[in-house]
Length: 315
Image 1 (spheres, rainbow, N blue to C red):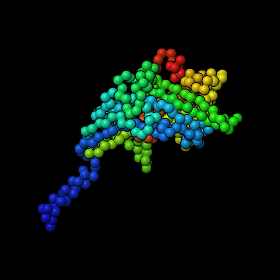
Image 2: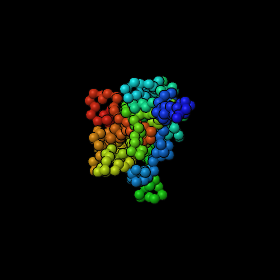
Image 3: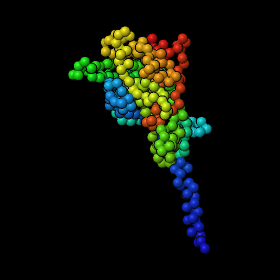
Image 4: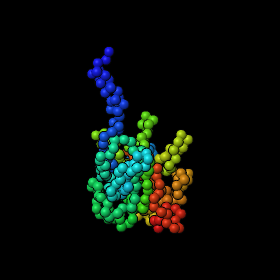
């Protein structure tokens, strides 16, 4: 026969099995959002096989990778928003390591399946994160930019092994993009929708920027699709005659004069009459969630009257 004490212990064990094993079954936790540019932005993109680096022998080093984050939001499955960014955050992800964007304390410990954020036009009152330069923010505001990248690319001169061919670039993008329904990359066949806040713990969600996306030759995926590679040769050539001025700097305007080669590029349904059109479209894809996690991407800026291709907005 069970004693009263034995019965109480058994009851306690059963209750704990139902609740104590689930860290989201009560209490409060913290959700923190950070950002990082990964090695391709911090260290540069080397020559490689198209995935590990440029397939065409170029290498690249970023000098700046400026991003204006906005509207970070956490909501449950019913769409009830429990936390939202107070004002935009301005960051230069060329600086090393993760940068803290915002911390939301005292959230109920539970799953929040709807996580979203925006990369949108920089504003003067944005909070400057980490080592980002206030002068860069002022430049972004004055030009109406959401993303700005600059750097230098080079490759061995085929006519002189002791020399390098070098091209610089300073590209400012006006794209405004919403990243919704964010989820982590699959791990062991499982992908987490949104975030899970656990009792007395801090969960960290990294908004990752991918510096290689601007050089994609395709957005196709699947078993039968040609693997996507990153390329710079056609961008470099846009600076040369007849489309460019040959001054060593590849501008967006020059890219917008260079017709895209469909035998090399598959624009995958994105506007892409020129290399510039495709690069501007690809600027909307730099935002990710927790490294390789994905979000649903949607344009949030209205299309100006008379605009057919992205380059039309940069004339």
